[in-house]
Length: 113
Length: 112
Picture 1 (tube, helix red, strand yellow):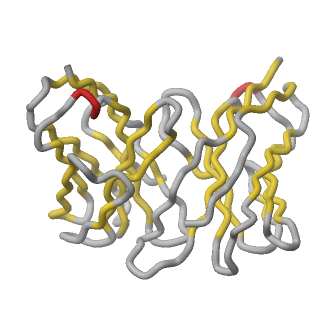
Picture 2 (tube, one colour):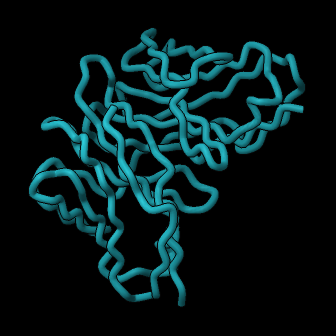
């Protein structure tokens, strides 16, 4: 499985945008980029995913570099509830692998009021 | 929304006991997963299943087995619990590749 690299931690101020980076220099052409986050004492939850084009949803935006070797998760206005560990994950369609995801260490985001 | 339910939030067992962790999902998902989460090690995949009675080893299957007799239920079995299996166990399910993964709230297992 291709590997991702994220900073261990980041800080943000409430109501400001947050850009969470992820490097994945060994990404292959069929790898999707997924982002999940894990709030304290909860299981991870889906945030967003994409293949090549930038993606937006109600939670966040995903900006994918043209060469796909890096991506950035953008939270447009951080709130205290966004404090969590954010995971950037690649997944490859392998027969019978059922969409498994291999989680790395993630970035712990803290949000200051 | 999809619900993934894990039978216990907290569980305390003795070394050598046989332990069953149960997970049920209510959205007819094909694929189910068991992860464990430890401080400093992140989430690690133990086993997954892409169909009833099918199972595949993840990255750390040693000491564990699984059972998927019905589509909605995926059980993780610790045949003889050991203290190094003290961990947070997370179950997840998905409709298929590149679809959202839905997680349960986790079971914090302590083996004494």
